[in-house]
Structures are given as structure tokens and as C-alpha cells.
Amino acid sequence: MNKKKFITPAIYALAVILLLLFPLTKVSPYIINIFIIAFINIIAAVSLRLIITSGQFPMAHASFMAVGAYMSAVVAIYSHWSPWLTIPLGGITAAIMGALIGLPFARLRALYYALASMFFGQAILQVILAANKWTNSYGGLNGIPRLLPTYSKIPYYYIILGVTVVCLIAMYRLEQSRIGINLKAIAQSHLVAASVGISEVKYRVLVLGVGCFFVGIAGAFLAHYTQTLDYTSFGLNKILLFWVYAWVGGIGNFAGPIVGASLLVIAPELMRWLQQYVPYVSAVILLLVVYIMPKGLAGIPEMIRNYYNDRIKRKKAVDVL
Amino acid sequence: MFFELKGLTKQFGGLLAVSNFDLYINQKEIVGLIGPNGSGKTTLFNTISGVYTPTKGKVTFDGKDVTGLKPHRIAELGIGRTFQLNPLFNDFTVLQNVTASFQIHPKSSLFDTYFNTPRYRHNEKYILEQSEEILRSVGLYHVKDTLAKNLPHGYQKMLGVARALATKPKLLMLDEPLGGMNPEEIDFTLKEIQKTRENGMTVLIVEHNMQVLSYCDRVYVINFGQKICEGLPKTVRDDPQVCLAYFGRENVA
Image 1 (cartoon, rainbow over the protein chains, first blue to last red):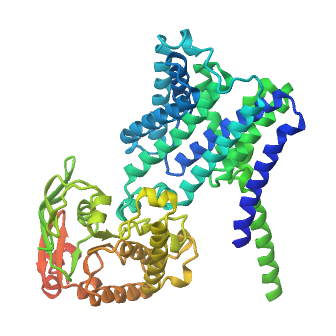
Image 2 (tube, each protein chain N blue to C red; image 1 turned 90 degrees about the vertical axis):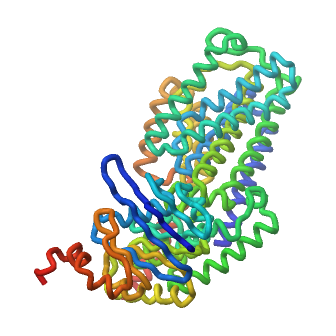
Image 3 (tube, one colour; image 1 turned 30 degrees about the horizontal axis):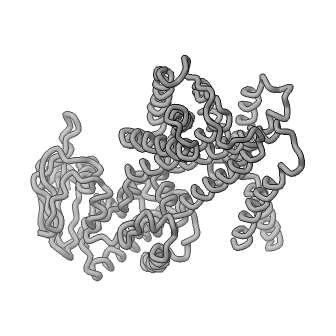
């Protein structure tokens, strides 16, 4: 137990140090770009998993990313606010919307929740499409103010890396505290949870707000990084991709969505020749992972540990005989 | 009156599950609610604890009207309950089940919880000590690191009681504590119920096992959603109507 307490932070620290040193190796801006996109997807996938731990099935997550992105972009373009102010604004808008839909959805479960939130998510996209007073036709936006007055990608890399680390620490704290325990309790049995005084509505609304806040922040950074937005890139495809990131990495583990998102964003880019088959490859990877390793990629160390423990136990049993 | 039901009625569409039920419990009393399968015991129970809202009638507890409150509010006010089926957080260990049930006393604010303030850490330490004590008192301390779903059935039921005790209830409601238990487990549970009586706890027990009767101060008998008898365990046992409900025609025996 103590050993594990030490190893996990060490791995995270090592990963962050490697990522800090990475741009010094004179990699191409293309690779840097892939990493930035991966960071943004990591925030989205981890915040999705945070909501899933409470037993909800959010199928509107990419739409909340769009809310954060468009809110931040539109305010920055039309009110000439600094992106440093509009990005938190985007996150807060997404959080408020998330919490508001959390109230009527608090009674829905499983498939019904998934369906209702999916339609709500699509409705958000339709609103963005219809708001063509601000967005150009077909929900597009160009010329979003840049975060920094530079064309180099490396400062962006460091900023977004920093934001990702902060977001992940914030969400990790939430999960480790009693709030996270209550969320898991609600997911296991909402009746029992209510009988010991856990308010299901309160915690479900809270976690939706928090999850949507982080994904909204991620979307806003994406907007000011790419400087163009296209509402189709936040469609159902994207939501399913977030789910795939979380599932492939492993829902049961905080590191799961991080591993899943990094692998599934970076790997396809390194295999350009497969580019048009990426959805199919992702699907095959998902099926294989679900079939072979139900705990996801992040569950591999646990699988190995269990295997060795079992072997030791079996050996002991044989010795006793 | 410590706890009182007045004309409680619960209707599911055309089905009258509980009709016009009156019941009262004094402080430090153990009251039994018995009846055959499908007589409305559990519905009554769920209506009291807020899972269902009553169609008609009034529930007062500790001087407050608690009719139609949400389950977590009722738990906060001091009514703890156990469940008949699936009574646990299955993927938590036994100890986690109990610590997770300490939500009300002490209660940490969201701010304290998130930022891990000294107050929160102090509360958590207290909760851990209390949880271990509760587990010792119900005889589950030796399995505290087992996953709840891997426990034998009797232990799971006991854990349900431990979880209800963690809410520090003023009124403890047990939903079929003997359901599905073997004779040894039944003996153990009955001893536990005796212990709660000695501790001066107010208890409402729902059962269809008649063995519970001898541990109760007063007993209500429900059949087809209606009260058919109430009184001391002895008088209830000899009541012809109760015999009819349980064994069929009275002259058969």
C-alpha cells in the first residue's frame, strides 16, 4: 500500500518532467500541435470520467466543450475582452448550463439519461448554428483572438500543459475527497445513498457543473489556440470519441482517460497512412480492450499484480499440500 | 408523540398498497410490524423513509411534520433504515461502507472537504474511529477489508444495520432483518436487537418471521394494506384474525 502511494505520484511527476523537456528536443511544430490537441482531449476525457463515476451517462460532453469554446470566442471577438478573461467565462457558462440541465436530469438513469442528454447536446449545437448573428453561416467562427502575440506553438504548449496539470490535480482532489466517495456511493446504489443522508440531486448537479466547467475551459483554450471553430467538430462523433478515450484507458482508474486520450490522439497521427480509417481502428481497439482487458489500459498494472499474487497464492497452496 | 403515522395511504394507480394506517412509537420502544408477504409492510416502510410520497395522511417525527420529505432529508432528521434486498455499496469494503455512511454527524462543508482543511481531517479521523467501533459492536470488525459484495448474506444484513447506525438515528427502522438468514444468523441478529433495546434505541422492525415478536414491546399486524390487529405480542399471537392471515382458516389447526 505504501509502495503504491509512492509509485503513482512518481510516474505522474516523471511524465510531467518529460513533457516539459520534450519541446527542447527541436521537434517539429506539427508534433507539438498533436500534443496540444492531446492535452485538451485529456481534460475532456478526465472530466467525462468524473461525471461517469457518479453513475450518470453524459452524452452531451462535446456540446459543453462547444459552449465553452463559442462563449469565449464570441465575447473575445465582439466585446474585445482579453482571452485570459473570456476563457474562464466560457468555463463558467458551460458549468452553469451543465448544472441547470443536471436538475431535470437528476431523476433519469442509465439509458434514459444517455438519450435525454444526447438530444440536449444536439440541441445546444443547433442553437449555436441558429445564432448566426454572431457566428458566420453554418456555425463557423474565424479570426478568434490569439492567446499570445506569437505564432510559435511552443508557448501554447507550455500554457496548455500547465492548465492540464492544474485541471487534473483539481479533479483528482475532488475524487479523493469525501465528495468523490459520495459520488461513487450514489453510482452504486442511490437508494442506500439517500438512506444515509447523501442528497443525490445535489451531488449529481455538482459533478455535472464541475465536469462541464473543465470541459468548457478545454474548449475555450482550443478556440483561442486554433483560432477557428466549426460546430460540426463538436458533434456526436466527438462525444463518442471522448467515451472511447475513457473506456479504452479504463473507467475505474483516474489515469485511464489520460492514457486513453493520449494514445488515441497521438497514435493515429503517427500513422498517417491509416488516417481515413481512424474511426474503424478506434472501434477495433475499443472492442479488443473491452474484450481482453475490461479494466482498460490503465488496468494493466493491476492485472499483472493480480496475476503474480495469484501465482504466489497458488504456490503457497501447493507448498501446504 | 415521538413518532406517529396518521391515516397514511399509499396508492399505486388503482392499487391500494397501504390504506389509512395509524401507528405510533414512543421513545425507547421496540415496535414490530408484521404481516404476510405482499401485505404492504415494505411499502409502508418506504413511504415513511421518503422513497415514496404518501397519497394521503401525515407522518410526524420528533415534533416535526416529515410527510413527503426526500429520503436524504429524513435521514438527516434522524430516521435510519436498512433495506431488504441489495442493502450495500457493493464495490466498497466493509469499512468504507460504514465510513461513507457518516454523512450527518459530523457533517463537513463542501469547502472543508475539497480543501482538506484541519476541520475536515479531524472529522474524518473521528469517523474512522467511530466506524471501527460500530463494526466491532456488530461483529464485523474481522472482515473490515473485505469487499461488501463478497460477504455472506447474514454479514451483509448486519452491515446494513451498521450503516444505518452510522447515521446516528433517533429511530432505527429494520426492513426484514431476518430475511434469508440461517438459524445461527437469526440467533445472532436477535441478540443484536436485544442489545439495541438495552442501549435505549427506538426501533421499528418489519418482519414476517414471527420469532421477532417476543422482542417487541408492541406489535402491529398488517394485511392487504390494512391494520388488522395491534397490541402486546401475546395478544397479537392469539388473535384469530392474525391466525387467519398467516395460517388460513382458524379451525384447520
